[in-house]
Every structure is written in structure tokens, then in C-alpha cells.
Image 1 (cartoon, rainbow, N blue to C red):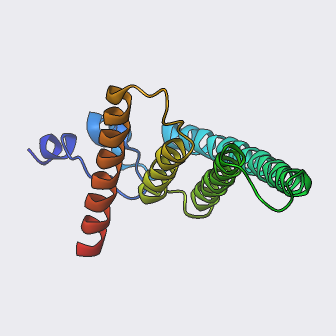
Image 2 (image 1 turned 180 degrees about the vertical axis):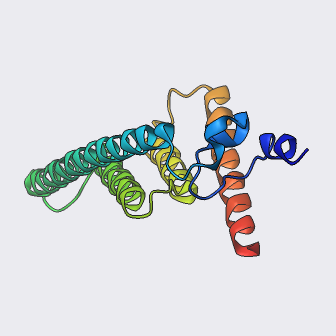
Length: 176
């Protein structure tokens, strides 16, 4: 009877693999398991692979942030020195704001990759903030002359959904 109960146990037993806990096989009482050592090795290689890919993504995102910042500085320098002088037109302002928001989005993505490397957890709040920033960037650089009203309603509903999701996640984390 006790063997029958052990067969359906869902919580892991320290020192034993889950395969033997579920199956209740003859090797159930042994400390070492031939299945668990293979999976441990696979887990170790997978974690190394995941860490290497995340580091490469972090470095590439850093290069993108530096390149976008250099482009933003060059664009501002070029726009401010061109005639009529220290004044920016509306189109130049939209271009500068769009690039500025793009740099902020890239920094937030870089932050989310760093937090994943550090904590091994995807921080959903940061992902929601990146989405909110991206939709806000789209709204800021939007040309108001040739816009379909349904497109604006879609952007508004997307922004409302992202903001609502962010609020719910923050509310849940504050309760805990």
C-alpha cells in the first residue's frame, strides 16, 4: 500500500529523480540515479548556453545603444547648426524625439537582459514598461495628417491594455 502511495507522489524526494518517484521502480531506494546525472549534465550545458547567448545579446544591445546615441548626437548637432540656427522645425523635433525614445527602449531592453542574467527571472514589469514606451514612441512620432481613426483607436486600446496589465502586476506584487 505504501508503495502505491509513493508511486503518485508529486513532490520531489531529495536525492532521487522524479522518474523513479513516479514509476516506483526497483531503483527507488538508491541514492544515485542514472537518469538524474544525465539530466544534471544537460541542465548545466543548457544554463551555460543560455548565459552565453544572453551575454552576446547584452553586448550587441550595448553596441546598438552606443550607435543610436551617436546618431542622436550627430542629428542634433546637424539640425542645430543648419540654418536658421538654434531652432528646430516640427519634423526635426519628431525625428529627434523618435530617436530619443528608441534609445530609451533599447536601454530598457538591455536592462531586462541584465536582470535576466542576474536573477534568472524574466521581470514582467520591465517588459510591460518597454511595451508602454514603444507604443508611446509610436504616438509621439505619429504624423497627424494621414491617420486612420481606427488606427488611433487600436493604439489607444493597446496602450490601455498595457497600462492595465502593468497596474495589475504592480498591484499583485505589492500585495505579496
